[in-house]
Length: 180
Ligand SMILES: Cc1cc2nc3c(=O)[nH]c(=O)nc-3n(C[C@H](O)[C@H](O)[C@H](O)COP(=O)(O)O)c2cc1C
Image (cartoon, rainbow, N blue to C red; front, side, top):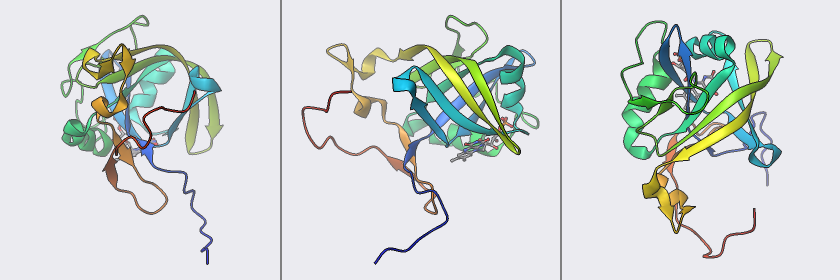
């Protein structure tokens, strides 16, 4: 027997920290609802209109997407629970800039992606942000034979649709991956 639910059960999703430069300072929030598309050349995420980070995204039309490892869970909880309107989140992480110079990325995260805004979809309470991926940056410690081994990045996964807990990435189940 199946039970029909009204919620969207497409899950788990990687927890990401989206960053922007707000009033000259880096600010990061947790985004759960994100996805790559266009075979990775673009990505998408949902952001409520009241978010402080959105100010910087609208001003510079750039942002970063950072994948924290499980060791950063405390910082994730701060970035996902406190707004930059009330607390200065700029000193939580060491940051670096890539090509865009207005999309602060997090040194402590194993993977960071810098993006320009391609499109903003107005969904009343929130925007769907479509970003064009400019460059991705990865810690060399996550590479094996020059290729990313995601297990070494130790991402945090978030289950939606009623579960709403964080998880770790599990084991590889076949040694030869499917072609991308
Ligand atoms: C697991 C998790 C997922 C979240 N996903 C989103 C999201 O997809 N979109 C969003 O606007 N806020 C999301 N939030 C809430 C923001 O991260 C939170 O309100 C943050 O404090 C906003 O910071 P800011 O105002 O400094 O931008 C999420 C929070 C958590 C803990």
